[in-house]
Length: 366
Image 1 (spheres, rainbow, N blue to C red):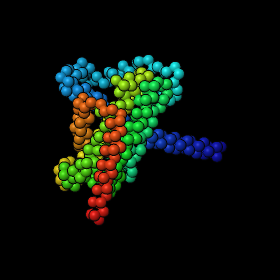
Image 2 (cartoon, rainbow, N blue to C red):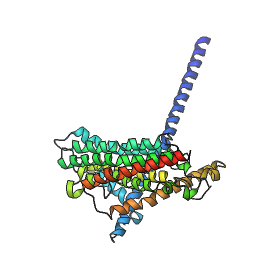
Image 3 (cartoon, rainbow, N blue to C red):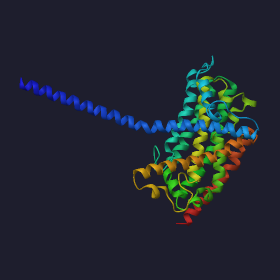
Image 4 (cartoon, helix red, strand yellow):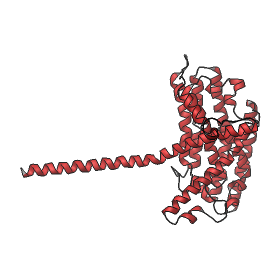
C-alpha cells in the first residue's frame, strides 16, 4: 500500500513538472513573438502615415483639397480604402494559372517584409543583427520581382505578362548599381552589418554621415531605389497609358490590396536604408555625442534612449520621403529604352568608378 502511494505521489510531481516545463516553453514562444508583432504593427502604422503624407503632399502640389473626412485631417483614409478592398470580390482569370496568380502577391509582400528584420530602429533595437545585413536585404529584395513575374504570367493577359517582364528587367538593371553603392559603404565602415554601419557614422555627428563621404554613391543609390520601388519616373511595369495596370490588371479585392501595400512597404524600407547607410541612422547630429553614452546609465535611461533613437531614425526617414513623393508628382515617365540605358550605360559605370575610388582610398589609408 505504501509503495502504491509513493508511486502515485511521484507520478503526480512528474506530471506537475512536465506541465510547468510546457507552460514555461509556451511563455518563451509568446515572448519571442512579441518583437515580431510589434515590428509588424509599427510597419503597418508607418505605411498608413506614408499614404496620408503622399495624398496631402500631392494635393498641395496640385492645389486641391486632399483627404479630410476619414478621421482627423483625413489620416484614416488609407485604412478606409484597405477595409473597402477586403469586402470586394476576389476574381480569378478563367484561363490563367490559379496557383501562380494567387501566390504572386504574397511572394512580393513577404519578401519585402523580411527586409525589415535587419533594420536597426535604435541602439541594438534590431530583430536580426547579422554580419551580412545589408547584403541580405539586397538578396531578399530581388525575390519580389519574381512574385510580380509570377502574377503577370499567371494572369494569362498580355498586358499583365509584359508588366511582369518589365518589373524583372528593371530590377536586374538597377540592382547592380545599388549593390555596388552598398559595397562602397561596407568598405568605408569595414563591416556589412547595419548596426556597425550606423555606429561608424557616430563619431563626428552630422559631418560623419556617409552622405558627405559618398555623395556620388548617394545619388546613384537614390535613383536605383526609386527604380526598385517602381516610382515615377520608373513606374513602367504598371504604366496605365501603355499596359492598363501592368501585372495588376486582373487583380481585385485583397490581392490587389497586397500589391498596393507592397509598393509602400518597399518605399519605406528603401527610405530606412537610406537613413541607415547615409544619414547616420539613430545617431544625434552632434559630434562626439553617442546615445548609449548619454542614456546608458540605468533601465529608465535605456528606455528613454531607445525611444529617442527610434524618433531620430523615423524623423530622418520621413523627411527623406518627401523626395520620392515629390518626384512622383513632378517628373514624367521614362521610356523603356531610356530606363535601360540609364541603368546599364550611365549608373553602372559610375557606380563601378565610385567603388574603385573608395577601394583605392581605403588601401592608401592603411
